[in-house]
Length: 297
Ligand code: NDP
Image (cartoon, rainbow, N blue to C red; front, side, top):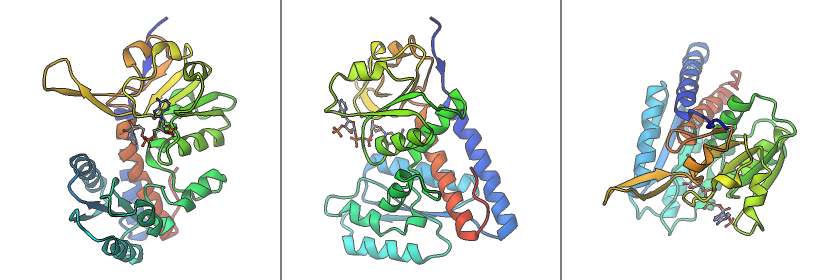
């Protein structure tokens, strides 16, 4: 059997970003509105700093406003809530992103719930989760599952009806919304997690397998149905062969899986770039809704 097609998330994300940049220019021309995202970072977590910097860079590249709020690690929860209130009320801010994880003395759920749902660029607010779960229009969808769905559709076509999909992982930010999106696309969806009995057998039934567990290379080649589409959301840093060096791997054992799957995302260069591109799309869509302009697909 020929090796799987490698799904080039980097190239797809570049195309999506170009479309978002066009949408931004069109909104400026038609309504005089520049989409703006407020990025709130509390503390100095190095991984969060890297993510936040790339988000801020992407905003500027695409012609959007980036309102950066980098706050000290000992910021009081009440001050963070007050900042969210100000951003909620600011008409130049169309999206608000609070980089997680927050320091331990701050209740993340309380902070995320304070963002008005229309500005919830990450789609983590319970109102957006509820709109998605009940299949209603206007839901802001979390960026990683949205990006994964776009890659699945680009690989298999828009019509996914009747396909068996398995989502491995049930987090609120990836697994659950991913399953909702696939269900809405008329797939027959199984959700698997740490208590699933016979995980390999469940995986082997899936035409579409989305892995979001955070366990390096857990999904082996013989867990995969021949010809399946495999979306590897995992980002895990492991020791490289060279002493003292590290490398990124996904939740899927790529070298084994590529011999069995029909198509597979690499790590890095698969789902990762889609996440930021979809954040840009969500921000543009929020700005369009606020301005009463047509919302891009
Ligand atoms: P969480 O830790 O929140 O969730 C992990 C899920 O995997 C849980 O539902 C857990 O089950 C399940 N799980 C853990 N161990 C096992 C196991 N041995 N067998 C079966 N299921 C298991 O992770 P996230 O959803 O936040 O992230 C998942 C991965 O995706 C991570 O590697 C993360 O880095 C990556 N990620 C990548 C992004 C990107 O942009 N590409 C964005 C966000 C995340 P249970 O609920 O039973 O505990």
